[in-house]
Image (tube, rainbow, N blue to C red; front, top):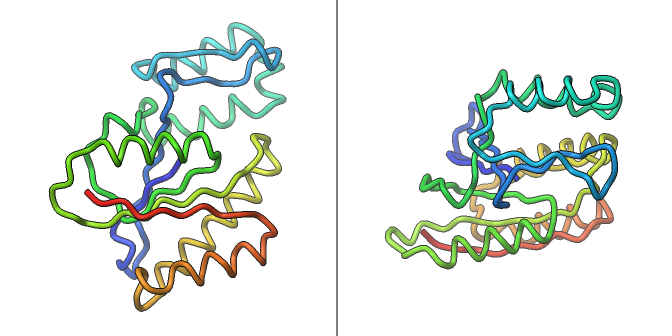
Length: 176
């Protein structure tokens, strides 16, 4: 999941990534045998653990590359439910995560009534789909950033992206 704020900053937008589960799960040697880590585990520790377990497998499936990239961005994963920062836009890539984000946002006490748009586009969890999905999400964010009135234009924009990508988008507005 990624969260964005300062969407109207024409120089770009700030992006943060989060997990929503109780643990960090990475693919393992079999679909029913994921590698499970606590959110306190650093990317460096995960990387070293997977190298020790099966360097060839985790190099081939791209997990080591992903962890190497992640550890250059931040030291460890973050859990969305533990973050109290306010965002303009939250994008999820799996309906289950979308539901968890909505549940969390709706359970928070509304203080500022600042809107946050939560959007889901389902992306299969593999390297090819993730790459295509990243480009789609980036393009969507750029289009949202360049709208004159995000609140009134986002529904039409999402409909255009649904037609263009042949993927359904879910959209809900919550308030902080």
